[in-house]
Image (cartoon, rainbow, N blue to C red; front, top):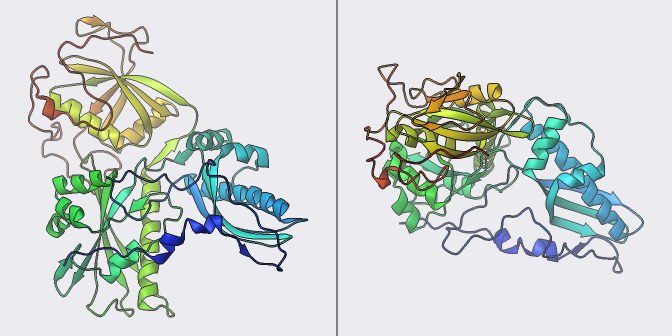
Length: 465
């Protein structure tokens, strides 16, 4: 039987929480109107009807559930003060999330903090004539936050994923592995996970027929690359996390705790694994324990992302790099690895010949700080003496003084449990080589870091911006 997720009643009432004001005072208490519809909201816009529905992924630059309790001369004044206080509290929380070991953020005026805010949403509020009690979500402008962190003297921060990860909760019961067939307690706990603030946005598929067609249970267990790509593309995700645990038929055994095997798959072919042990509390009930286990696993995912995605602060800058190419597959693989790196915000292919490509990489911090981050993705960034020419065409005036080189899979400093290095340390395990001028169009992915040139052998060099 195919599982269909049961949407909680609260989801249907969420939109009313802004429009309806729960009076907490006497009969004559004033009420405060919700923000106008045109005001930016921390909740993402509704997706097109063709997009599957799933529990909403949290925005890494949004802070949810900020509690405020303000007394003032009247309800409007109390509400205005509450919003300012919520923005200040949210800024403190966001700084701690993005700056590893950063402690408390530098003090900013209410005006400066307001400049960082993109919008807010009233999740819940109670208003009387002189008091405002509520829960508010504050959403910040990513680039403004990055600039503020760098201006505060922090040398580095954690760059959140640009896209969410799909979570596939696998349950092993009596030797049988379940994914879509039944709504197991483990899946229910993940589905009911609130889309609160987190560093790594997560979405749980609905379990409808198209999900089961995209990836089957065995494919999830074995990490089938094609199936993982299908389910990730269905939810516009940057990767897939398989969360596998073993549960008795009667529910979790609170005397033994829970062991969760996590495998995170990137669309660039990387794979990282970790095992998380969740210990029960004496007061836990089975449902409470699984809910807490999901929260704990989410926190561990955030921490793992922090360890591997620290990047330099500072204004964005562009570095011109040369990429040596031995085949069309080299360029395809380079693009895939760059696509999975949050430290590189943008790239632009300037030119390509049969032996080299010239690329502009946009990033924060200087190239020396970017190099170790690229190394974690099995890419080597080194200084080189710029040559006088690239192929038969002259280089731009600002000749490339850096070279980006493919490294064997698993040889980077942060590869962890990624695919093992090739037996020959000098070889790069890529797809079969093909001359750049004869590679078929299908060899190039349509998404990622921009479309490749149509004629790889004759694309001219143009001046760098």
